[in-house]
Length: 301
Image (cartoon, rainbow, N blue to C red; front, top):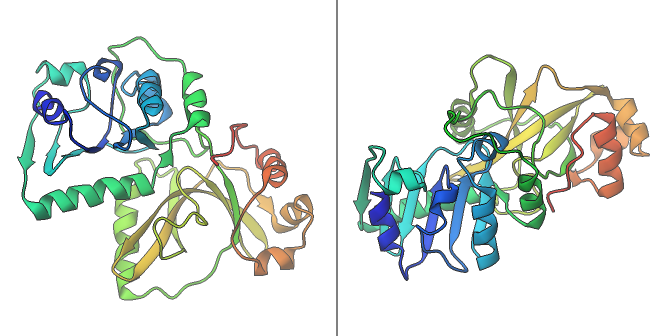
């Protein structure tokens, strides 16, 4: 099936959300400027060789719009007016039928539109791949090929790719029935075995593309009455008129008092509790990174 997808891509617009794209895919899929591809860009995917930093850099240089999603395992392609939904990754193994794959191919307008919406949603909740991200990916040592690729192992709480730091008050919100259903769907999506993390929701902009909101893998400092909870932003979702963000806390993360954070930012507890959501500038980010012992990785933007 991957052979069919690659043949279909010749001269057509390509949009895809495909978990893994390895070195072997370099000469398989015909891509061009303006095409959009979302891949699993987790450290584990790169370290295993399942996702190739070298391949992504070559696509980036061509002008392909690239996004790194940490937990993506889907394989959805929209080639022109045809959708493919199946099991095959972008790999030489899948292309040469060395693995048994299956997929549905359809030109039914509603299905194609749904596949396109899914890909766009994955891109909206992923990290845009740029020069800084690619420089980081080049530093990840690649293990010898042939080892297993672990999808979504109990993911590390700390970010392992460029990230921003946000600060905002934790507000008590009375969710509507529609929002409650959306929250429950998010909890199911983000559940992780082992119980090392807790998941929660925050009120967020109704626009899924609003640049003034966090995106994965940003870190968020939730201002509570007496303390500050460091959480990892997962994604923001919409359904009908409901919109919310999802985050993960970790029992092993560093926690600080509200007074410590206020002092570090040159503010007061009252100002932080009553303030608006804000993305930290470079100096604020550096102070908070040291205070919470976060990785010294570049800012996302």
